[in-house]
Image (cartoon, rainbow, N blue to C red):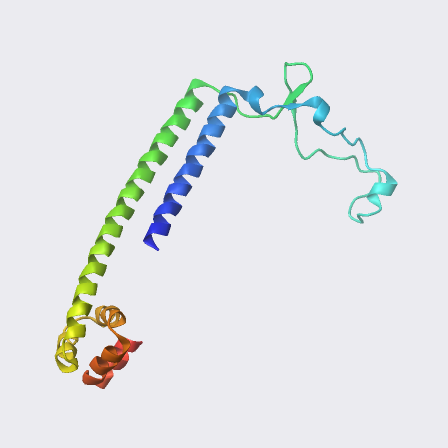
Length: 182
């Protein structure tokens, strides 16, 4: 599960990076994202009674409103989408945001790696304890499990053979055994 979270964090950081690169490219080269005017559908001037018939909420004499406002590019035959003017301040702000996002991603990745190492270490210790308890008789193992938390006891018992775990649980106090099984 922790490896999945790690990959998810790396994927999310990568997506943020790609988004910021695309935004930066849009500011640096606005013509890169422009659409040729010949590929756009012709604008609808007004609604006709036949097109307004399917919608009771739109009167027949209402002029059509464009959902996207476009601004003509200086290049003949091309239309570009409107956007804020690109300038040194906006580019430097985007670069700072990108650096901050990258630093945050590296910090989260380091934290996830540290948690993974800690989890692996804990899993190794519990596996070793389970092997030792599996080799003991049930009464001695029950006395030892009486001194650990319910969660630790549950985790260790899951690593022991089912038959031996049952014997250990039967040697425990019935109230404690019920608490461990919850």
